[in-house]
Image (tube, rainbow, N blue to C red; front, top):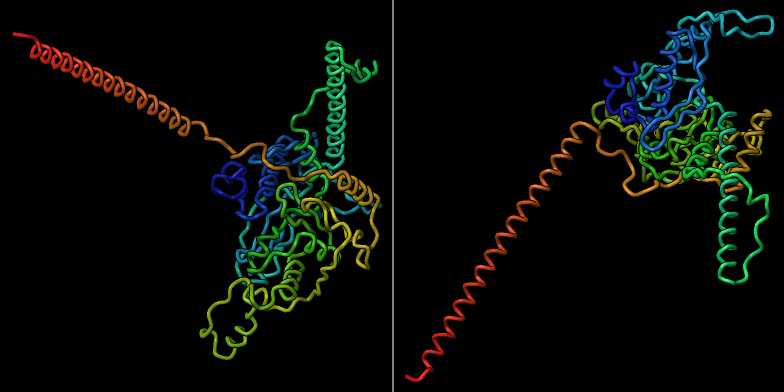
Length: 459
């Protein structure tokens, strides 16, 4: 997983033909790079894939895909791949699709995916050769998968199945415990609870999923993600760039909702901000947050004054501004509202939130699918379903890899055994020396007693 997250770009490109970026969205980026490699391999055989579930779990990636034989759809692979332009100076990023469909729509205004005419996509996706917020250069990563990571209907069906089996297993276990308690009480002659009914005692044995809570937590977080918003921002990374106190998750999500955009969390990061808002809207919200809650004491609040001094004294008389000072020196075009929006306070900072939930003029209409999603997420919130559970045991993580690590471990065990053997030999030698000393002392004592007896004896 570290290779997919950008720890070793050369190794990632040699294995997956994609250049990773070492950024806060690295775990989702790793999933998209893996799906792009699978889709590319399938397209060579005239097949295409449909991701059912793509999850970043603990320290590894797990993807479930459905492979279909579709030579026509396989040719439209460039429509499902994209490069990412990442600003080196801040958290802004833009996606650039590899290709576009230039075929003419039919009478109904739709295009046939099996007869698509693929041409190069217009470029570049970035507004200029430099980041408009910090003036830094762009780093390009990819290509990676830019389509949905999950099939939400399939995810919901699996979650319902796990929940149902878990409930049945719990009921069967409780019935077995009651039956055992009743039998024990009957054998001891004590009054007991009434025996369970024949239907519960005759129920089949249901397997208990030991990891059911973690599976439900993962599937719940996955089902609440925005399907059409690739990658995400990190709330702490945004605040670290501006050197300011991070806003509460609910407050930041409310500001995005009040601005008329969608927002959700991510199963890969509890602090993720997955949204369809462009970068300048995110920075305007952060500028308003700094102005209202941080003042001039953080984030290089004197950036405007430094710019004025720089303009008067000359270009070389003032030190270069940091990324925070450059961003905060610009007046926000959007006046952010941090009023609490309905649906912004999901458990553990995750959950699909739509502008319609804000209940204001930005709400607008919502489709039937959105209403269904909102109802299901409200039910999950009411039942207090966790999204992120603690690790199952202390020091949870990958263990020593096979090969050199294993050889070193075996050598360490041999060294420990050799040291123990040496200590045992030394202990035996010390014990023998102690025994010899005690024997010499006893002989000297007997000799002294004998000499004393001879002196006291009469001549």
